[in-house]
Amino acid sequence: MVCNLLGIGLEHWRQMRLDLASVSIVETYPQGAILSLLNDTSHLELQ
Image 1 (tube, rainbow, N blue to C red):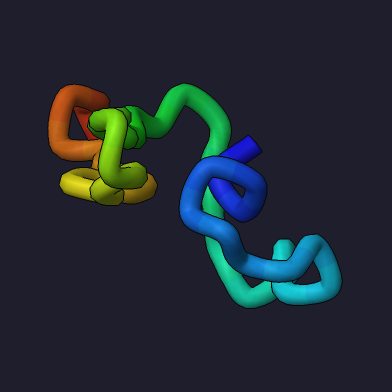
Image 2 (cartoon, rainbow, N blue to C red):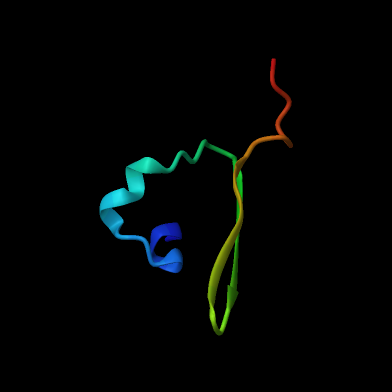
């Protein structure tokens, strides 16, 4: 989904890391999309 919204070819999906329970934000506008946050895990308590 992130690749599609940003107009990146799906062959590049493995170049992005998305951890379980991470937060990513894609803002969509009529002119296109902006990736403002990717793979944020700061909300998780790490041990």
